[in-house]
Length: 351
Image 1: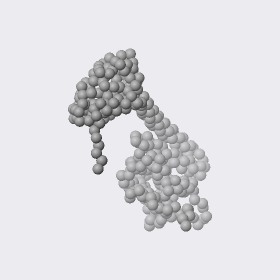
Image 2 (image 1 turned 60 degrees about the vertical axis):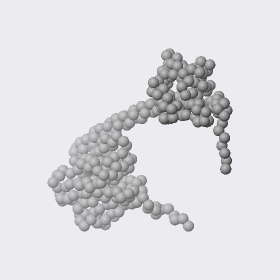
Image 3 (image 1 turned 90 degrees about the horizontal axis):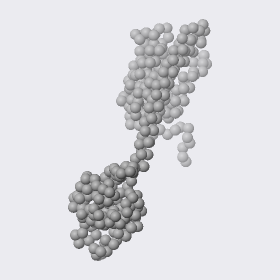
Image 4 (image 1 turned 45 degrees about the vertical axis):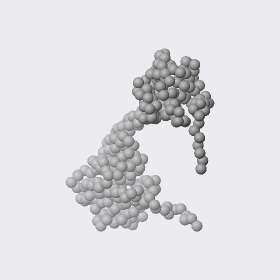
């Protein structure tokens, strides 16, 4: 059994004084009346206090009374009475002719002996420069966010202008093939403009997919569906919120699949409906675009997949998702599925 012998009062005081003398941090040792017993050299240097002018004086009176803060005095008195400790108390130190400093103070009662003598150890940290740096950082982040939002607005407006020019050009050209290509480009530009509008409305960098897809499909329908009674786009999406970068890829996939359905699934003024469906289960998700049109093309003529197909494949790879194309009876259903625990098939298995 080990017996711990309390330090003699004089020995405990000597130990405390030795700690303060060797400290590189601003430290002050106070008695029960909140008078200064000792102060570290770093404290005196940091706050321009002569050591001989501080010892044996009330703490509130040193530094020409700059430390006379009523709330701090109350907290120190409560600590001396054993009723509380001071942890992370922040205050502004205001001194005539000098800049205000932001300080963080902590104090605790020391119990080295049973003599009844009260000792308080007060530590002081100057966080002025850190607070200034934080404010500068916050201001820069705020300015960056405002600038990004302004850029997004300008990009969206520019895309609207480009789309308008494309549509005007489509009306003027004589070639039907050129007109078709210009209308296709117009639709894609309009969809990207819708993406930009939705992203600029997102303040936290996250996008709620339901409203995002609804706005996107509304834009596509307005630019490509001439008779809403003939064709419609239905959005069936859960309450998923995802990062803006992912939402952009998902939005472009929806754009390409919806455009493809509008162009090919309903020939000869056929009536129909396109459904955009997105649901999550844990970290897994599935995006599906289906129609009730004429069904899958046979490609018997050897035609190669178009640009839209390549875009969807590239975006799916970026999202680490698999593509499935199925006959919807009637129509076609294209699904893009991501499985969080899926093992990539292009990587060899470990031996």
